[in-house]
Length: 334
Image (cartoon, rainbow, N blue to C red; front, top):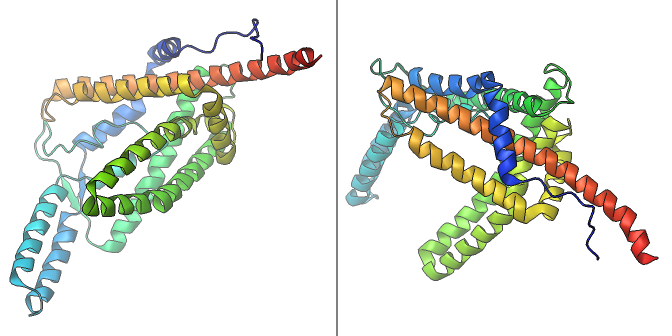
């Protein structure tokens, strides 16, 4: 096919990033949601599970100690591993589930495990039963999805000049947020768990085959990360449902893979690279940690805004290309 000279250039990666930072700089209040979440996870209470699991391990130990069929060295190894597990579990805060995926409020403290705060040891709430644990997991994830949908909706309104006020379509956006998250959760369970199980079996049986399988999976993930990254965007920009948004993301990735892959790679490198900087201060240093939390909220929100801008402009560019091709092809055939 001959080159169409009248085609506009595709959206630039750097220009989209700059536009995202400029948009958040002029609407700085949007960073309040990630900042408040991080402050809550940092200074608020800890919802812990170590007492629940300690009771379970103690009950299991009483049962196994009365059994003569279990070798003593196995019991000692179990006690050592359970002790190490409980030590790690003491640093886990169940409230970090408020940071949901793929749609959620960005958080620096959800991955960190600060044991102390500038005001001393935080208050601790122990989960006392398995049923309570399951209920809290479901509740926290639903809350994360709700506020995550609010956060994405807020950012999408900043970068779009044609959308209605915030209240209009907000309920639909949150509903599609929950639906999309459930779809990805089901896919992660049905595909991710068997894949990890198979890979673990290969690692234990043949290291060479496991290495090749890891390379293949890494290559496949490069082709999947772009559609997954842009899946939520059409829900908030064009009020599409979750499945239409998935299709639109796959369609864009099909035609713009090299440029879109570069954009996603730069966003990921910037986000994770800056996280190392924000995590340098100790959690008991008040001023420096506040600066890090504010910087993290601004940078990650700006990158989200840049992704909305890039997606919006790339979709418009694709529509222009398709229209040009429709008018050019009949002329070429003639």
